[in-house]
Every structure is written in structure tokens, then in C-alpha cells.
Length: 74
Image (cartoon, rainbow, N blue to C red; front, side, top):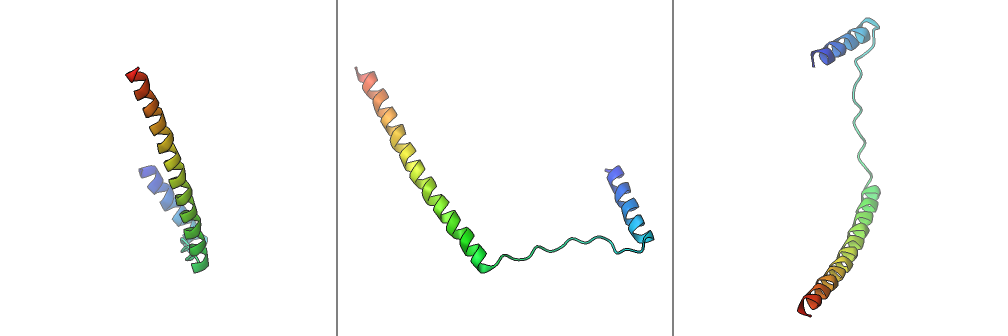
């Protein structure tokens, strides 16, 4: 950790000696409402598909369990 802090200090010193401003983080621009709506629509579709897949899985699982029970009853 000390090495990283030392490297950061050296980097800042180099920036200062060169007469440059310290590097700054750029703030991420907010997504547009249409972009958010598009993402929401996509997520809704994915959720719908996941629910359908889950229902089909549950039906198959029930069929397997039912088959196991029938085998045990024989």
C-alpha cells in the first residue's frame, strides 16, 4: 500500500512539475429518458421470458417427480 501511495505522490509531483492540472474524473452523463425506457422495456421482456422458462422447468420437474412416484408405487 505504501508503494501505491508513493507512486501516486510521484505521479502528482510529475504533473505539478510539468505545470499540468491534476487529472480529474469525468462525471458520467445521465442516460436519456428514451434510453432508460428502452432498457426498462428490454428488462421487462427478459423477465417475461425468464418466467416462461421457469414455468416450463417447474412443469418438467413435476413430471419427473410424478414419474419417480409411479415407479416407487409399482
